[in-house]
Length: 113
Length: 114
Image 1 (cartoon, rainbow over the protein chains, first blue to last red):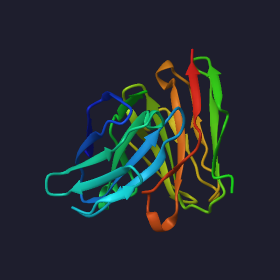
Image 2: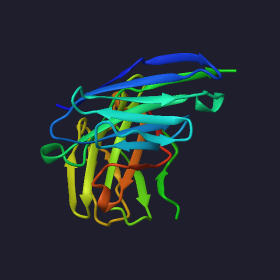
Image 3: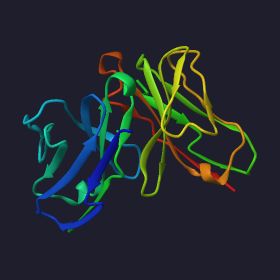
Image 4: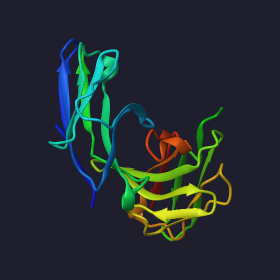
């Protein structure tokens, strides 16, 4: 059974801080790892990672994957109150678990002014 | 494009009632799926479909039925609602080349079963 564990489950920071969110996983025949941001509505796509060591970057957000140690991190620099959200990590396997995304429970990030 | 649309936005049912949650997408996506989200539980896959006429079970399929007669629509049926099905339901779709990753989510349906 595929499994995703995110840590911490919640985090409170001040504007301007840098945060690191963690995601570890177990999946049969790994295909991809995805990060989503969820505010008070539907999740929105942030990154898809398939290869180890290649950083994906979008503005102040960046993410990297380590397929040997089976984890990914999501970094947010110079946090703003608009970054407050639940950040979800998901993995997709191939073969028997093809097409299925397994999600972690999420990290609730609160950025205070 | 309207993207992924879901109706209704909110619904209250009594135990034992049946209903259908509607999901439609206008992006010609082959892959569609249904998730439920409960506090502290993340998103859990209920059923998914890789194309018209093809459906399969996810992690928590019991109590739910699906069918996929067209590429655009993927309704989720609750046959006999139970309080344990109180949740927020999200429908998602993904283009053929993505094979289920990079999913686009609908706005969700908040269901309460009394």
